[in-house]
Length: 365
Ligand code: GN1
Ligand code: MG
Image (cartoon, rainbow, N blue to C red):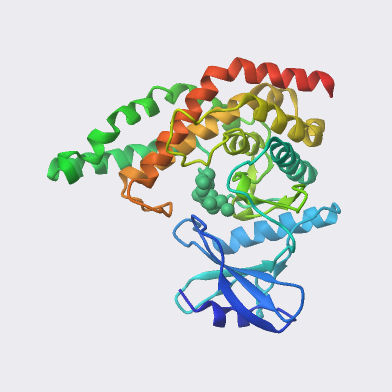
């Protein structure tokens, strides 16, 4: 990866750049804050080439979405062009970099600290979907199969096969192979397969309409102001035309759990119905106007679908030896997977209650 201090000089930043400092601990990209002599600061990001196969198309999608939001009078960051006019700079190592404005006086959260933040988050996700509802352009499918569970099952089967061949070669630490350790968790994946495929079929067939969706609406991908009002969605790397239910579902996974997604105390992890209700109220007050009957019917289940998918992805990455998500300690992906499974089970137990909450909200709108 090139030196961020040098890379930044390839972008059209009008102010004098003072320094470039590493920022945050993203799972996927490497992010830097660019401080200038003026109030305006910038974000410089090295995009992950192994995750995103077509970064130029991804940047084009981001540019279309941010321009559309601005044309709707909404709030968002602005991309900064490179000096050759592109929305990215490719360095001599072949890495792709993007630069965009930093929105001052904003904050991110790793998990929802209180119910007001949950409601504000709901408004944020609903606002994003609503601002994009009138978009008539075309976005490239930059991550084919991203929320396609059939594609995830194929990947999962491959990962299981690799783990099986490794475990027949030699048992790993403590005489317990990764495979033995996860065998019950693998069963939990397959016992829900048909149910999840049935939901994907609604997407594939177009029963759930294709609209612009963010596809990664966890709490930390939204900015809030000092009063904890939502400002805008960030991390638009995954914007595509799928179903907005993925956005609702992923956000419930993140906001309705009072703990972070890798919380190790499984008995504490749950889908909190009060948070579900607050998020849904916030979301629907912005988004109910454009949702059709099918979308409303399947809204609650989307939370189970996305939580299940996330469970599968963390488990798969653990079996693969942590090749996708950045981890903070050995076994982190296994802890994440177990935590997501606990959340999924809590959602399953409360699905009728979630549906009841939603119909009450629809009745009041
Ligand atoms: C990744 O990039 P980031 O950290 O916002 C992942 C999401 C997962 C999320 C889990 C491109 O999101 O799909 O839901 O981690 N993004 C990609 O925390 O795979
Ligand atoms: Mg992010």
